Amino acid sequence: MGVAPAADVRAARLHEARSLLGKATRTWGGRHALSAPTMSAPVDDELVLPVATPLRSVLPGHGLRRGSTVSVRSSTALLLALLSEASAEGAWCALVGLPEVGLVAAAEAGLALHRVALVPRPGPDLVAVTAALLDGLDLVAVAGVERLRPGDRQRLAARARQRGAVLLPVGRWPGADLEMVTVSGRWQGLVGGGAGRLRSRRARVRVSGRGAAHRERVASLLLPGPSGAIAEADWSVRGMPTGVERSMEALASDAEREAG
Image (cartoon, rainbow, N blue to C red):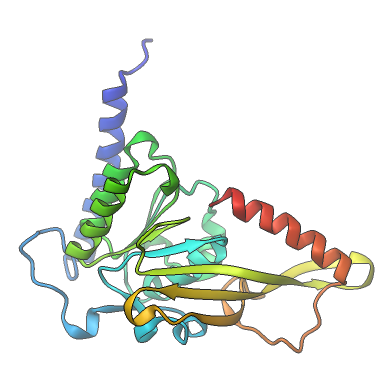
């Protein structure tokens, strides 16, 4: 059997992305679909998508503004936490180029899996697939952005603004409206000698950006919390022994850097 031409493979990937988009739009009934360029902008009470309570104090408008680009760095748990509330309340989300994100972890974080489109390996069609999903979904998270050209980044950000979607690049994104990064953390659950199970991670999340978001904000959170979802941090709870904690933090930092 011969190998399919590269053009056929790319066409198949684009067809898959657009099929997911079409299914999402049909199931949703077009209530918030913004696939037509001439469609009017969302009404005022729909301009901000909700986020979990622990994140509201550090985000302008206490949520994710439609049409914005929000860069997420250093933490997949933070990315899932950003998507969870909107997904639970009816928004459609996409995870592009994130094969390491498991459905169990996404469900524990609070995402409604039947409203999540997965394109784990978009290959060379990252820009086209992301643009297709921005046409009709509310939130599109995309990894592998470090290989995009400046013009591609500008076109995707403009697409999000036009369609009223939220673009969430995983990694550095010059010119993002907001940048969110986990700057420190401490695991909880182990006792003396390193015995026990890791239950949650106490972390500090830093948010900075342009315009109204220019003033830097920092939140102390459990990311993830004991249930898998984000939670307020209780800094009075004792963490693991210092040596074990530092080893775990080094491993986590290495993994997060590899993830972008």
